[in-house]
Image (cartoon, rainbow, N blue to C red; front, side, top):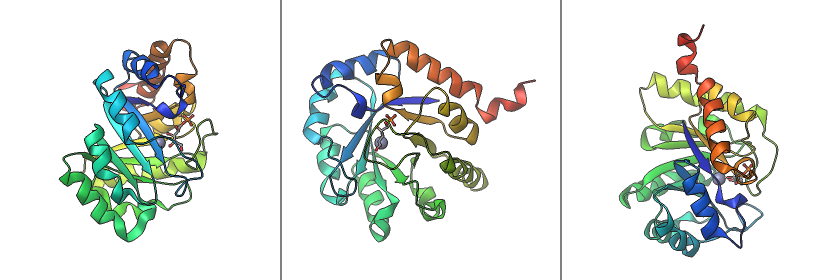
Length: 227
Ligand code: DX5
Ligand code: ZN
């Protein structure tokens, strides 16, 4: 179970301080939402910010590109210190090339899909990725309500993974809080991106611990061991 606080919910005047806060919380990944004002109706931050916070933590940098032209951003983010780069399946016939390019840069390969996109679209890529990120809100803004209709996608992805004996991780992104994390874990997710629910807490360490515990308690792999 991996908890990934999203820097989108941090104080924009205090990125460095909030990065250290996330790092000390015990969360393994730092989720970095990159928005271009075109693929999504918002703009966040670029490679320079990632490069600036990179020396502050050993956390795994999970870079989520919500961008129409990720081709021009892969190298800058790789150089800035990304450990994983996620692109969106909605980019259609450019996806294969993008995944290959991320791999060739020596980074972990992630693929994401929006709530309105069918899970069948990611199927051809499952043997080429390390991580599948299921969007549980329409991307662009933090603090939105979790869309429950996305849960069957997690189950389907977990089923395909089992059938084909693959080992990509399954993440969820958007509206993940102490309640919805249970449903996501139960459906088969094991990476939990959470912005508002974690950064909004005074004690982030306790919040991460609690979220991890709820996820763990709902892990379907442990269901057989429970009475
Ligand atoms: C949505 C972003 C999410 C967002 C999640 O466009 O991709 O990562 O930061 O934030 P919360 O947890 O506030 O929904
Ligand atoms: Zn994200």
